[in-house]
Image (cartoon, rainbow, N blue to C red; front, side, top):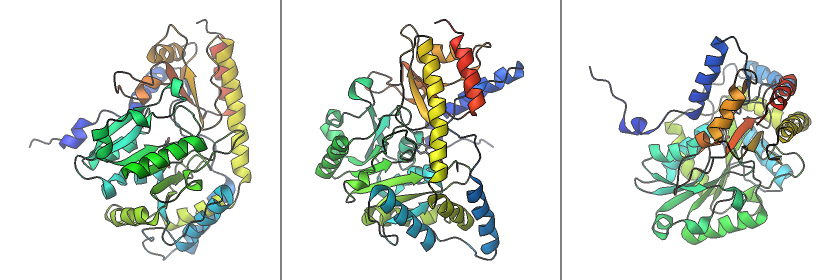
Length: 391
Ligand SMILES: Cc1ncc(COP(=O)(O)O)c(C=O)c1O
């Protein structure tokens, strides 16, 4: 029997982190324990009160059956309450909010609701793979918008060719941005909203990192406008809940209602006891503040280590990453490899792996990304080892 993958699956490359995993595994076979800043997966515990709410939810819902496709009313109400408190925005929990199984699933599946074969989505490059992969699986095409330091890592919307704009249905944006750590501004969001309204394009704003900031609280685009906008939120990074798989989509009820038609065909909703945990997470800001302080300490240690060896200061304002510009004579991969040599054994992700060549450049070239996820002692150790490097 000849078993072949579909053309769609065949067309996608390997997931970048599979390559990182291989390098880490290789170091381990040499008896070296690398300090892993590769994947953005927090290693600290999920706060105890959230875990407890989950455990209690399992008991409370011992005969609850399938969850609601769009989330339990109390979860959607809590999301609306939190959104009002955090961003000052009004959301109708009935029509403008739905639960998701983390933002990844929702981002991947969303294009099914609005993309016809041959339609375009516009997406940031570098960027989260699910924006373009979801479009690919919906038989659409992605036009990549390069994020360059000279544009403060904001896309140049005016550079999109008119024929692509005409066939575009979705613009994916993501600020605070993974991996560049760039922040949104009101001016930028106004420009996005004006562009998308003029060209009838849905704004899909991946806001997974709005709670990971150091000093200035980032905006949600919903603070400026709801019409034509959908926002994807997540508790993964806010509350160390990556393993829970919970988030939500919110915005224009016409867009939400389109997405609601897709989701029941794919899954059966977010587990109810996970929603109980998410409610407990949203009810509390203290743990979020503590996590912020932990990231701040790690950021400061690593920024200091890189500047000490003469690399540029790339101190981020938020996210859980550092988008470190590599020293001049290095490529992204060369510098990541230098950090991987036995004496240092620090795993980072070359920026060129997180982006693709588009319009003649790979905008991630010249950078490495560090996810500030190892425990604080390990971050100190990584900094000590980096400081011994001569570059
Ligand atoms: C920009 C961005 N969007 C979405 C996600 C998915 O997060 P989750 O599915 O855990 O909510 C991530 C995860 O790293 C991300 O970096």
